[in-house]
Image (tube, rainbow, N blue to C red; front, side, top):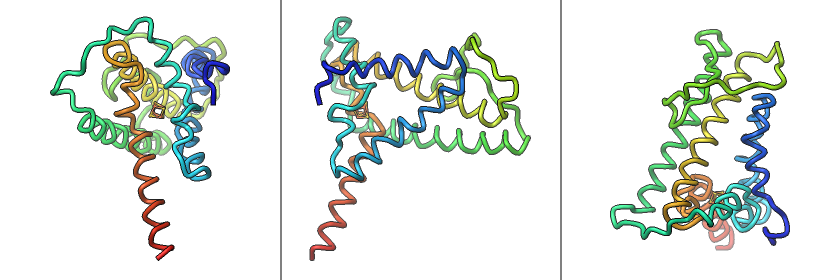
Length: 194
Ligand code: SF4
């Protein structure tokens, strides 16, 4: 697929801008996370990563700002990919559990952006269109997904500027999970063909 013809990086920009209208738009992150795996199951290839990913397209647009440092030896992409996979898993666990707790009325929703799970930004996200009766769990879930997506996009952007534009792809949890799914699908194929 030709990314130059379709400016899919705009989807990434839209994702971060639309929650300024209303934070509920941040819930589209769920579709962004599910789509790569749904497409992989259908095509049995990492089709998403090979031209459909808006975030990867966004990182390539940072090329003019690229410094082009060499990756230092201690910067082991395989180890960082594992760390990012754990970070992603822990984050999804926290998001799920805290949303359940909000739903049960045990804790208040966190309607603030937090980077790396715990570093809260000191400003509120402006809301051009407020919905008075957003259920608390949905409000909480929206801010948590926005925080997750913002953190990973910022990390990926820093890597894109420092090293190569798509350095993030080597440590991206979606990539690691996709690799795991592909290996498992291939193993099952081998077993059924035996
Ligand atoms: S590895 Fe991650 S960022 Fe890179 S193309 Fe795939 S899903 Fe997108």
